[in-house]
Length: 212
Length: 212
DNA sequence: CGTCCGTTTGATCTTACTCAAAGGGCGTGG
DNA sequence: CCACGCCCTTTGAGTAAGATCAAACGGACG
Image 1 (cartoon, helix red, strand yellow):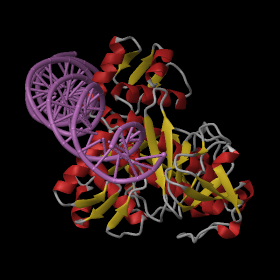
Image 2: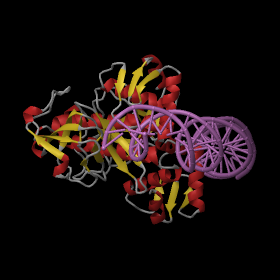
Image 3: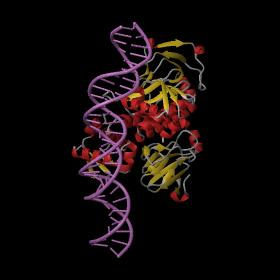
Image 4: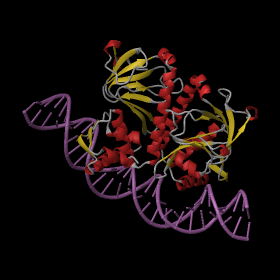
């Protein structure tokens, strides 16, 4: 499923504080360097994960290399449960990431919680569908920023762990379009950039309006 | 949740044969005329449904009227379970539709099955995301036809219960683009139209290739 | 200091959208 | 039984949003 070189096993006690309650004792805690694969399409689907630190992208590829990022996951959030016995998606650490890994036993013990998690996963995917299917580039970026901001606690300063390419592949746009829209929002003073990955939300209400 | 005028209650025994095993005894069986609302955004989310006959669309609206159809449901399929205590979506009968309705008690009894259903719902939504986010119009239509065909049992003759507008709103296209692509597939002899709603899949392999 | 990688900006092109109008099937009413 | 109207679908012409291709910028790091 993953090369031993990719992870450092750590004792459970070293896990950092988690913003969201843990569902159960983790099987193990593992750390992945930026860009490392957590699982691949076809891998056995017998674990689920909660992020202690870092960020994760879950995506799928077309045969010609086009990529669709279906979700990003931030500290406290869970991911990795899918239908079927094998994964349909890839999961990678975006930045250096520490995960609590839960195994099959915990899945069975907590199927009730997993139901809630699966339902919110479905809701997220369906909300995402509306954004990608029916909103223009500015609306997509605005919705993305608002969503990320809320998931980071709602402050004005937004730290993006992912690249422009990741954002583009999440929103069904190109990297150039993402960049141009961000520039446009900056010129309209809706946001300000400290650097490319750090966004200051100057007018939160204006941004929310842009989501439609 | 729905007006009494919209449904005819029927005894359980009148339910037609279901292509897929029922999860439990239904609370009641109801019939909806074409276009009738099954539930609306904001309605209490305390039931789930299995289709005995007909077809259902589940969708969401933006404030300016843009619509995203999130899923279509065919006989044997289940729908209606969502995260949260209230619906985020609308569900409507596309054609005259008969549903088995399950209540809160059955939901609790069968939370294990609901987990599987929620997971496949999430998988479907995420697959849909790839199609809408990263595929061109022809690929979207091809994927739609292949998916629908497989869900109808895989025969060559495909009956579309939904309008071109429904398909457009499902695939994130306009009605004109859907019509043009269908015409193009017809001209390439990949499909043939008996009438606008009845498609003969002449070259299933070619159609599958177009999905990428 | 120079290279590398991610990001931004510019010019042009293409796909799908918009606006418009013409079929075509079906039900209703004369 | 036919005519009319309605709704869904198709087709056409022009447009616009975002993609593509290309190059410059800028910060990090060796």
